[in-house]
Amino acid sequence: MPMDRIDNTPTAADTREQWLLLDRQLCFALYSSSLAMTKLYKPLLAPLGLTYPQYLVMLVLWEKDGLSVSQVGQRLCLDSGTLTPLLKRLEQSGLVQRRRAEDDERRVDLFLTEAGRDLRQQALNIPGTVADASHCALDELTALTRQLQVLRDHLSAVGKTA
Image (cartoon, rainbow, N blue to C red; front, side):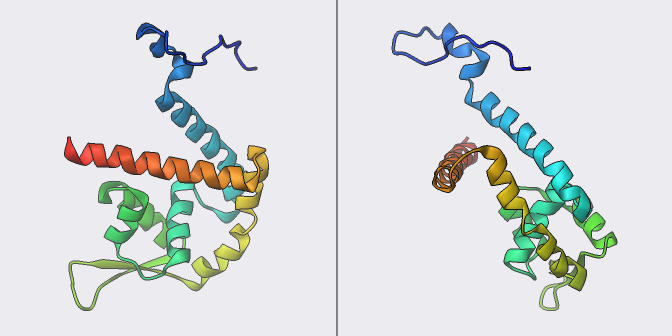
């Protein structure tokens, strides 16, 4: 049951203390939305045998197979300490293969197995289900996604210079 909210529409007359209201925090809106999104995905991914982070890896490889571990990590904003156990589980599930690059023994490349490629077909309805659950029109979702990507890029740029 949702909690009653006070009017949190920002105004020029707001004090600094008023900006500390939880519902005015962009970080909390993003965090709580992320939790809700992950919760929505859980039953959608269960029949595929994937967790949400594993699904993200599969999305990257369905776009372009044969990427290096570091390329996948960069694409998903994940470090190797987080990515390595995820990839091991995907490999144990028979969805991906990790292979040392022939031209550089230090690089590990990722390749979808036949089962990994076939799983894509089972995932085709997931984006539509998520879009329906959002109660947003496609153009709204596209605009929101773009705004969040721009926000992410701006925040990442600040983190690199700090």
